[in-house]
Length: 405
Image (cartoon, rainbow, N blue to C red; front, top):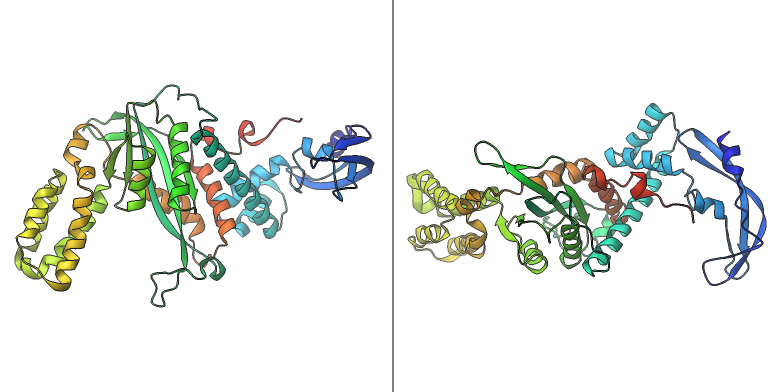
């Protein structure tokens, strides 16, 4: 019945139509196409046009029904994307069969999901370029939040040997096994709890991810920040660890933003600094670390430096201490934790840290997984959309489908 209904308009649009390459295609005949839908396989009979110059053909009805170049209906494509973003492709095929009675091979699930993810990633890049170039100006959020945060981090994804060939890694053989996926998340805050701690607004996160270099990823972050209202909020804050590329993006793309180094990372570096001095601190190690943690909570980086300089060092130990101390000196303006807290700001990048584990890790970093770069980028994009605010999800028809020409 569905096939007959869709075939009622066979898409015959006259004897000739533009082929899209500057030529004219001629009506040839009517041909059948069978594709899978949420109700099962459907056969559509539609008009076929051939271009003698381009040596290819097309059916206008396919484009009108959003099935050109695919064998899945838009509705089934959405279901497949959700399933494939949730877990491994074999599991996704099982879910479609168990929950919807749709039989797709694992390879079809993989190809369709990666095609959707690649299309969405391309759309994100196109939208970002338009926003960054001020060709598209997003409307201010309504209602406009009081505070907007952007948190950025990177996580390694295990790749096939082809994707890491010639790249240096941290392994004993010096070969890379992973590629860094950069993840950004924006979220809002309008309130604090009864203890004065900031409270993230519910369902306010939107995620973006890319394997592109920091310079390219920075443009995506900038566009997403603008889209989320960075130009309109009272307080814009960028959170991250001590990675130089993160603060390069923050300074270049959001010079007006407050920059905060994640407190947990700072404490980890302070513990590392203490271990480098342990041979001189001896039984005072614990007491010394507690005092320095208190300095850190107050943002007293000068106090930490003064406490370290009291101990004369040379050789390897001096190099170790100078490296760790440099982390604090270079990030001192981003470590004014007492002042940040007095303003009700987050001082931790836990949202993006958990995103690296939950959004990316639980899908792309499972045991035994080895990815090709295009596939990993596509599925990461689907995962980000799945984890983002409901209004940002790509499987909503108003964001996912176009009206017939």
